[in-house]
Length: 405
Image 1: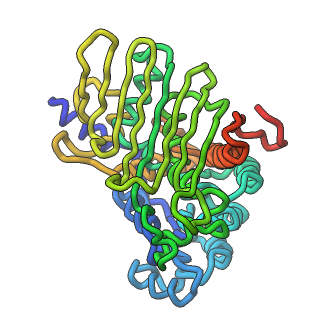
Image 2: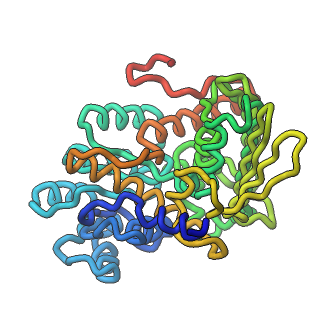
């Protein structure tokens, strides 16, 4: 069997539950990320989307429900009504996807946890660390599944990068450099009526962080995920480049990791010519690797003193995790939507394990509520450091009782 066929067969065996999981969605009418969640959930046929509170405006929610072909009696005017009603149905939803602006994440997640429903939440988890810790505690107490959709961590070659670091192929990790460089807020579109930009730059809806929350949390999670190391210290300089904007749109950070490795992070939304420039580089004392989202099917791997290798998705000899994430043969590019679908399929395996009481057949590496809270602790640490002109601070997550690890 060819390497291509092997990879394709592995993808077909990605832990399908014996039936589709009943899923609801909060948000999604007229936005970007809600339809992404819905499409990702459907892509591998692991879920049946049966209910939604698609807008905070009941009339908009009802109209969107028609377009999404949801049963009229299961399209709700708000998420609290949805949580109560679905919890009381014998065929009620088993999990909910929360895809609203940031300021609604906490209340919506709490409502569904209170109703006994598993939660899948977009990032950032909440707008404050106190709220994030309350969700961690509630998820632990109830035993419900709670995942945060850091979809970039489900690209096959990110999984391969992670596996190579974990297997010691790089030796001792010394350097971790991550950047997320965009241009979409170069102009003051948030001040000119663009509603997607407006809520992301409004403290009332985004929280205290701008770019550091919107894309910095993705970069931070990716650095932790690939390196296998927690960050123990950071020094941040956050900036607002566009006059009149209320939140940061650019940031430069220095990082220190638990094993002594050093790192950098650049996050910006005001760099003309950059659409979605996500890149991570990790270097050890034996080898280094580099991955870029604009060439997501390839991983650059360089052993010291040997020729650089360009490793392609679907090649023979890749890690089992990278093969699980691969859905089509080489030459057919996979991208953002497929990675997001990988996250949903991994979550489906974990959900079915919880629902049925059976073992999950392979490791589930997608971000948990604890990872989401770590992201909020990072935002607050970066903001604190920047206010103190780059003073080094500890960004690690306090325990639920408030103490440092």
